[in-house]
Length: 506
Image 1 (cartoon, one colour):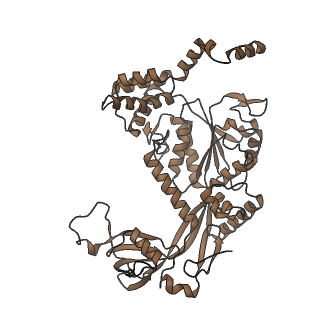
Image 2 (image 1 turned 90 degrees about the vertical axis):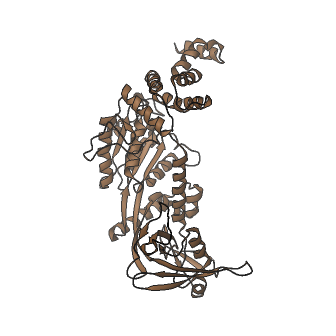
Image 3 (image 1 turned 135 degrees about the vertical axis):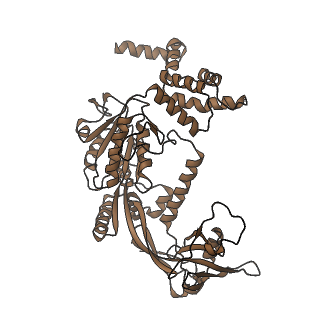
């Protein structure tokens, strides 16, 4: 239990019913100031989740990433891959295999399985993983990390991996809350004549059977003003958090205006009582519960991101509590997906930790990707397929990706042009496809935006072959850069040292 001050009377306590949900116990003297039937409490974790979701939505709208065109795996109901669907092109065998893994994840009954996506660079390994994330939806946790980002001076490697595991496991907590749902009949707001002081007001709500007047405090008045609630709107008010949701306008007010916007939605006036009980489901991750219950940081670490190392005793207590909730039917476990890209960058300590972590009860489905063949395991002198120890490879199922054909590359480039809002002629797209086949697909995708800028410079509306050739001559690919270095290596610094090293090695 932690004590905090009340906004009204400086006497207010917060009780943790479970780690993410706050319960507000009001004193009797607070009630006249806060209103008759509405109590406002703020759930910090819910506010944080809403803020993060808002930032993600803005980022998704304004920025175009390397895999922002992918909407899913492009499979039909029988898990057969379509040739071109949801941004995915080709790789039919790998997509079908990923679809089977996806069905296993959605059932949620099998956890602790591991999948390795192996293939050459530029064959769509990360794209398949991003397609799995899009197909899972928002409720299933999906965590994507790189194999090199776990190495830090502030945190051990095993702790970074453990936090990534816990971020990928969700807990679906069921809670019954009281809501007020009705049609707004009238809103009266009294403002002080002097301009200073708190606003007070009254809100009249009705259903088909009853009508009630509620006294409003300043917080509720601000919320109503922010949501632009007016007479005739159907709203719901969560009594625990004070959150106001507009459901639409009442059918009885359909003729108030001659013209309305397309976003206006008309709904029936609610029936029955104004106050109702509603079951609300919160989905949080085990890592968020760990951070909230760590005494050194508390829930403020959710905002700062500075979680540090969390003690094993805290995690054991949380695991025991979650198991108790499952037995009581209050919570369900949602096994998610942990995607580790460039997994060959992990060392032997990380691989040995994964061997044990994959077999625990609370383990997500582990998806790894690598573009290495027979190579040395990091930190050792032993060679192994994909740079992964044999004992861990024995626990994996491997999905192989094949190089793209020319027609598939052309489809991908056309999709990227649509994603980046670039108009390109068929001849220019053919030239760009030929460049992608001779160099790499990533290099050709990067030429799309640069060619579009050259086209805008000459005030053109469609990217032509000359624009593509122009940027191809300005920006080199890896092969041309290597050829240039071989021809002019004598003019670069430290070339003599490299020659001496080669002679010693010979």
